[in-house]
Length: 294
Image 1 (cartoon, rainbow, N blue to C red):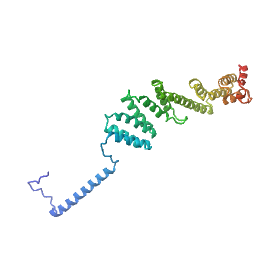
Image 2 (image 1 turned 90 degrees about the vertical axis):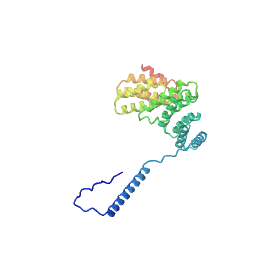
Image 3 (image 1 turned 180 degrees about the vertical axis):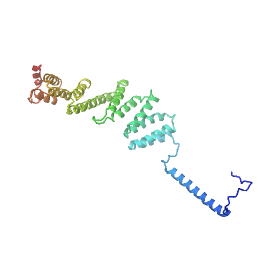
Image 4 (image 1 turned 135 degrees about the vertical axis):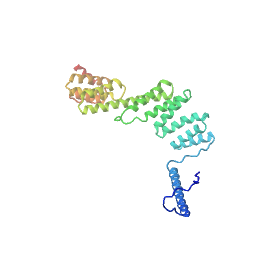
């Protein structure tokens, strides 16, 4: 609190304004300060989202509301509601279930990164839970669903493969493992498709050595995928371009022996002999003529 000086202030040589004038000036200053203060408070209130008031409710009510939202396709709100179960009732048996259901809600909402974070937390906190196989499986699916066009980077495909293999190895006799193995084959086919896409690019650019290496990788590392017949054909094609006719014929014979009904072998036969043959399904021994060249 300010105190009045007991001694008169030194004179400045100017007349001081009357006290009433000074008072009015002070009131105007105070009014301006109040206005600025109120404006600042109003701007602060508008600066961010309004927080929802905390209202404690029974765990059954929150959980059932979350399930209803999930069934209605309101996945974002469902995830929030399941998270609210844990926030309000962290020691309830329903809190553990709600953690997993929140992750599933994120998954259904295509928020795969959020789903993965929630699932990793669930796995870390509840390694012995009866639903742990499903948690691993849903994590694998969250990666798998992000596998994009083969022309894009395939890091996410590798993560999907690792997660799905973990499901198959940890829980081999479950329905989750069966589906994981099926999706592993699809993911490997996808990765082989990526190698083929890069190989075709090098072939178009006439970088033949780089192209052959990509196609060979498909044959050696992804031998069970659907891309192997084309990979063999491309290797034969490059050999012909480089004037290595005998090598091209050998590759074509391997293609015919392993994939006698493949359209790629029809093309390989024509590439190697200059002749177009009929439907491979009508002549199962047609590829054997290539062995005459070996």
